[in-house]
Image (cartoon, rainbow, N blue to C red; front, side, top):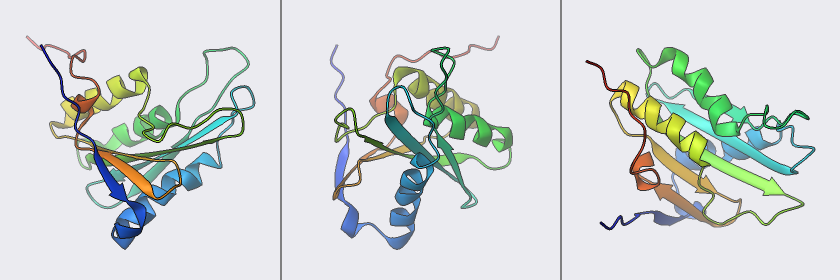
Length: 156
């Protein structure tokens, strides 16, 4: 079995004004991060079908692993309205003074599973934008690019 991951590499300067704003919102959200232990500040913006953009940032806690990733903060808030306002895209941004931020900053496995669950609940894909603040922006059409063997609830 072979799984090929497809990620588009785009130029930030060539994105539409709306997409630039959406991706930048993840950067804005990262400024609300509480990450005194890892010094890895992550922000996530979530685009809904009606155009609303929700935000989340990672929130660490001295009682590790009680903190929460930016993606889950934003997505759990967004999940309240899935029946009337689905999630169409998320954007992830990170900055750190302690670690090198990967150019392709994909969400962690726990966050990928949450994205997958939301995708399954709403029965539509969720695009994932990844940006480190430089000119290159990466886009995956769906969480299945990163999590092909996700857990899925079987209803009987």
